Length: 172
Image 1: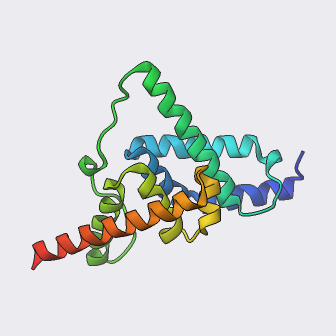
Image 2: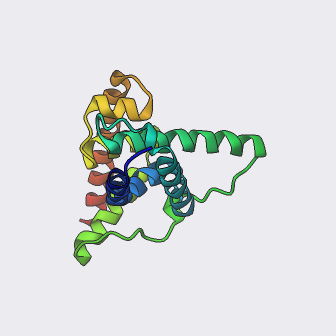
C-alpha cells in the first residue's frame, strides 16, 4: 500500500496529465464523448492500480500505454457487438483550444488535420511532435517497433505538410 503522501502526489500528477491524455484519447477514438469516457476509465484504472507504478520512467508513458490498451479492448468489444455509433471527428464541433482567437482557429484546423489521419499516424504524430516523447517511449506506449514509429511519423509529417499546403493554396 502506498503512503498517503505518495498517493496524493500520484493523483496530483495524474490530474496534471489530463489535457495531454485527452488529446491522446482523441487520436484513438476520433470522438469527443468516447475520448472522455476513455480518459475517465484510464484514470480510474491508474488510481486503482497505482500500487503497480514503480516510479521508474515517465508516469505519462505508463498511463498512455494503459489508455491504448483500454481502447484496443473497447474496439474488440464493439466488433463483437457490431456497430458502435462512432461519429467522424470531422463532424464534431470545434474542439476547445485555449489560445488567441486567430491561433485557436488555426490550431483547431491543424488538430482536425491530424485527427483526419489514420489512427496509427495520428497517435504517433501526437506523441512525438506534440507531447515530446522519444521514439523509444512512443514505441513502448503504442506497443510497436521503433522502426514503425519512425515510418509512421515520416508518413504523418508528409501528410500534414501536404494538407497544410493545400489549405494555404485554397486561402490564397
